[in-house]
Image (cartoon, rainbow, N blue to C red; front, side):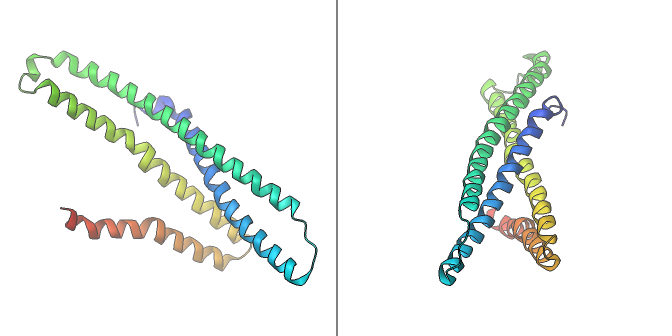
Length: 182
């Protein structure tokens, strides 16, 4: 985290945008499902229903989701590029005193290739590992807390299913596939 700490603001903003987009997406699905069901029931029973407010909220959530996803991509990639730039500067400052006397057994192309691969792996860490996992944990907590306000048993069942589907199942499948991949 030594290279991430100067950019904690960028990383935190990316996380907040990711969570906002995630929660807008979940809210959009929930409200759309309720709205479609309510309109069907109102149509069958002949009861009047206000469809302007839910329709406007659905449009608003769709815009929040789109803007959140776009903003999250821009901010998280900017943060990642800044971290990588700092890391590359640090690495070259460390390796420069060693050149060429202590690196004579390495070909320059091999050394550059190893450096690029290692830095690219670090590039993927925040964007593909840390951000989705933290967003998922916070999203699961928010959804569970919201559902618990209405029905605790449904909240517990949903929590268990989200943990199993989002964490336990991927870990188990990875362990099962690992020997085959070797």
